[in-house]
Length: 232
Image 1: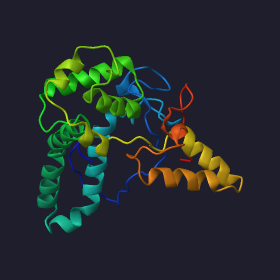
Image 2 (image 1 turned 120 degrees about the vertical axis):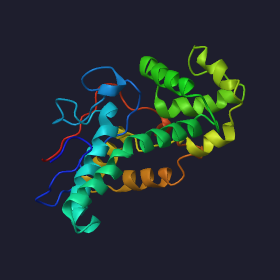
Image 3 (image 1 turned 90 degrees about the horizontal axis):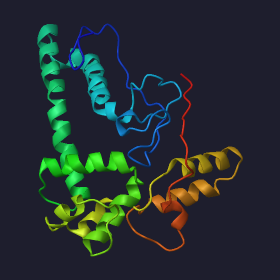
């Protein structure tokens, strides 16, 4: 196996891990520490290998392992196959950064935005730890003239760029499968009651559309750390 992001001579077929997952409520939520980069949920991830801040690097590592499994299909000559696959994987970091920034600009209702503004927002969220889903919906209302979600001069600089609140509402969900709701649905299903599951699925069919009598699905769950348990 090669260095991170590189290819080695894979003697066996690699697989991608599909372990338990959760949805981050706030940028500072963590079961161990209170920084966003260290947010972890898995009971077996004691070292933070799969922490929120490490996800881009872990994704690249997974792609490298996947590439090793595909080497026989890339080229007949093994050295050439390794070179081609390694080059593809090494381009991941830049592509990830481009798509991440584009996604964040969309959530902010901006076609263009300086990287400094995006970095400052991430730092602000990590420090203030708001509910992330609710934050971006409140931000759209602020673009319409409502109050700012937080007290900071960042919001004035963002509004000066003329964000589109309607576009924000199309990409920022009101409802997500929050951990406590998923847990509720799972507990019900185990007990033979599928009603909570069907209700949750129905809500999530239109996650960006505000609907009456669904307030509980838009609220953050109980405080405290959320831990998932894996059978591996």
